[in-house]
Length: 169
Ligand SMILES: CC(C)(COP(=O)(O)OP(=O)(O)OC[C@H]1O[C@@H](n2cnc3c(N)ncnc32)[C@H](O)[C@@H]1OP(=O)(O)O)[C@@H](O)C(=O)NCCC(=O)NCCS
Image (cartoon, rainbow, N blue to C red; front, side, top):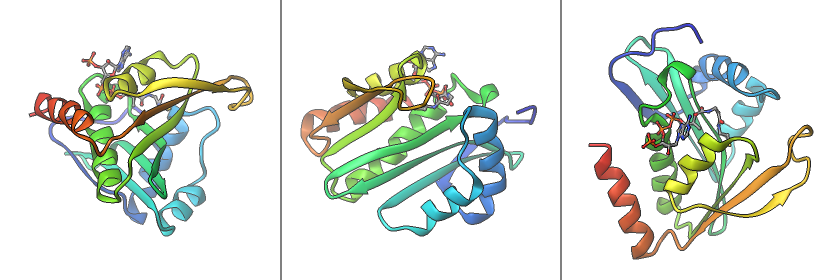
């Protein structure tokens, strides 16, 4: 991204005014980026929780989104700028999504991830997510791995989440 992602990075709910920065990171990250309009629609709909990570400089350092239907929460997107990766920002964003899912009384968490995307899969495994199937050619050029973690409202997941949370302090 070529910006200055330094110092304290604050995570807060995404606002419409964040969309230009979010979209810049989206385009730098994904081969088939969402348009700004897709993000705008997501922010306007119920059952969605979107968060943005903003650096001291004001630059968007990351974002993540969640769609909840009944007791299932679906991670729709997560990205961290290449220069901010490896500093637990992805973990912090996942914790925000899971807190939002739990606030919405979700019991299960799922997502799709490129089958070659080992770093993201490793992040999700930390949260107890396990691969349960494949969506063939989901990305056009590649299959998606479908990952789930169940019973996120139960004590076992709560303990895992607390351990992750305390590792961030
Ligand atoms: C996936 C992504 C959001 C992770 O963000 P991040 O801020 O680097 O993640 P964290 O620093 O919180 O890493 C948490 C864990 O994920 C795993 N991980 C993250 N990057 C990794 C890498 N390059 N290789 C292996 N494991 C990695 C590790 O287990 C890591 O824990 P550790 O730091 O104790 O080793 C980031 O790499 C990214 O934006 N990638 C491009 C977009 C993308 O692939 N999104 C997912 C779409 S499904």
